[in-house]
Length: 532
Length: 77
View 1 (tube, each protein chain N blue to C red):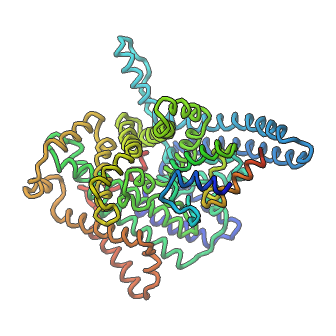
View 2: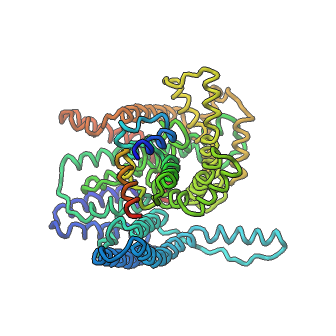
View 3: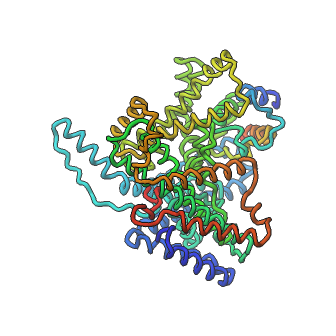
């Protein structure tokens, strides 16, 4: 069941109606039922994997929770008898046991993801490597289907297990409630990747019908549909046209396709998030924010803090911090300080962790070398910008550049936009080599006349489409500036009188119906991140 | 102890007025790079073992919270 479909709209209306009339204690059961119906409407066969991950996570969580409880009780009972060293030794022993449980859960859940998503990629590469050495590789290519949302719910399950290991909260003791946390329908398709302590209690609590909240949710859904149908699916036409056959195109046209793809992914993913958050809001549930106007970022590092926030947060808490603060990395730090001196030596282990994070983010997007290159591209820019920061500062000082003014911030914003857009060559290109070739031809075969000779009108879009794209980007820009200034647009709309509000809703609906991308020439349907 | 902590913080980020800030993490004043450097410095300066489990925003949002964390760590040995 696609988000952008009449079936989904009817499903949400029916589910909400049933949810609000159901007695308080059973409301979460409706959400569970609805979530499983939604999942089965998308893929019945692959439901097994979701249930398996849920069961493994639940059981391992329960064992971890029991160990935590026993440890707590024992330490409380023997508080006065034990010395500090004895307490430390006791904690270390229980921590050892817990590590085995965490390892088992992560191995099974992540193993499933790796097998289903990367088996053919890894096997194919091993076969090629062996062929290069004159040996025939016999790893078969399997017809594997990727269960809906596996890249999202696997990360969610790992976060739950690791948090229990860290003693952050108590384990869930109700399998069915936990199944709801793992399968909540608005966020199973493409996130946001939820944390148990932020989402679970909201799902289990009963929420009453609230007219104000429902209108806020509907507004968000409408806004999400607009981003997806007016901008993302329209841009997709030109982007696909260029990327599917890049050879005839040069310079600015290639750059337009890459930048256009960046905007398409933004409108598509952020639009999908708006729909997910809007639906959850109708039901009284606040999902985590996944985007904070990334194109307003002044650096790539900031861009990644504003883009896919829940994935970034997951990587920070479960990969970056544990790696950077591990004993192995501390030892590495001592060694690099001796060799490279204090400034660089101190930073190198952190850079290595950051690089690993970006490689993982790249690979998380898909099983292809182009995603590895995408990770390397982002990691390299971030690491080099931090390393070279003292040099930049010296140059800026020497050239007397005023960095405390709008023009400088605008320059930084544009620089980030260009760098991000170049990175998109990797994530959208057919292959790594094609992407590199497109990048090269963008900067070498520069033809500024393409803006005036109608080249852009040969990409599958007419001039009316370009007007629509331009106006919608302008609307996004204005809305973004308002949000950056702390103005809560939906709350402002709610403050207006009834006539104006309804005029706005109907206007938005009409705009969506007229200017949305429908018909055979547009590839409306799946969200990009749904395929990850 | 507070002076020592402020020295470390000012060394790390001279551009931030640490005593005035109340949401160093929540407002994104300190990023993950800063946190990793800060924790390494705190561990060696105060002979504590702040680890990944203690990296909660509440422990690093203010200078006072950081001091509290250090004292707690020292007491726990």
